[in-house]
Image 1 (cartoon, rainbow, N blue to C red):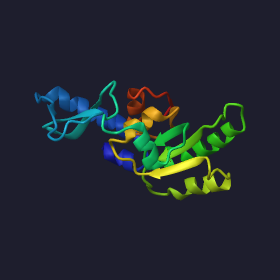
Image 2: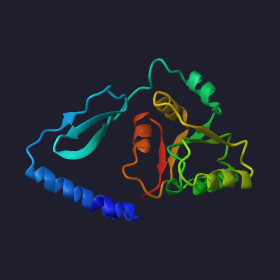
Image 3: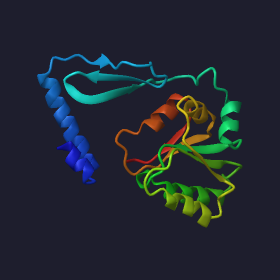
Length: 193
């Protein structure tokens, strides 16, 4: 039932139905959660409940970037500017990136602009083109940087380098990137959705 709501765009109803179903299942189950097999994650622990068809994730509250990956290496690899605001997730409409670009453009017209650039990191999802069009329309090609996919080991390093992590999404299932950014010690600005 939760899949129906989610697939028809009623995400909050879908989450509510999922949690109701999950709590009913827990009340009737004697299963124990088990850590999922595989390589231990730097950012999260993944576990399952054998009788429930779902994977669960717990985010560590603090972690250090990988020792083998330096800020200089990441800066060169992704051609990052010295000071930047960072968005890191898929580029798609629900992420509200056109509004982010417009807000960044408005910031440039204030005394707070400083030399801060905007880095939009992540793979292109569906209907990504309007974000690129808005950057071009506002003449921000020299100030807004697109990195495409960021390797898992590079993401926490990149997050720790940012002046702030921005996440203006209008809908998230859980919204892990802001939590990861906070674990990196980076200030987070996100939507209240």
